[in-house]
Amino acid sequence: MGQAKKVSSALSKLFVYGALKYGQPSNSILASSGNGFAKFWCKATTTQKLPLVIATRYNIPFLLNKPGVGYYVTGEIYEVDDRMLNSLDNLEDCEEIYTREMHDMNIGVGEGTVPCWVYLLQKYPENLLSLRYLSSYENSTSHPYIMRHRRTHKHPAQDDLTYEAQN
Image 1 (tube, rainbow, N blue to C red):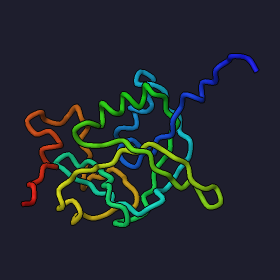
Image 2: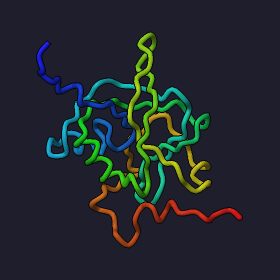
Image 3: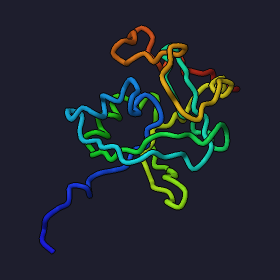
Image 4: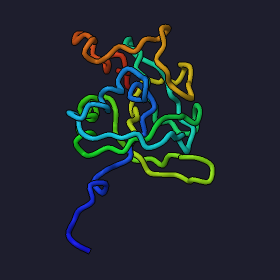
């Protein structure tokens, strides 16, 4: 074969479970070609139970890295390029709040699993585990998601996620 390089070889799979899903407040980030390439691939579910909660004064959906707690979480897989992943890393405060990790996602009975990037909350206050666990996120009037550009700099989201070290 020739030296032609397939564009798809540069794409990664990304599992989204919150405000980035189709029809949710931040999906426009994935839809904007200025951020990079993203294309819906399929619906999927986590292969392990994880707690999905809505937290902070901005009602942000967080997937806590606490396997075995909560529900199997449903979301969507997108094919994305490195530019989109970099854009999302910046938007998702990857250094300060989330970590992006590779996890297997279940794509359906008989279909098996596929490795995907997913944004998880590694460090969090224990009281987040006392919040109501969700199996699927939908923005609602009872817990309206506050878009990033509408949040105040005086109260960054990570302020609501600080916790006291246990002695």
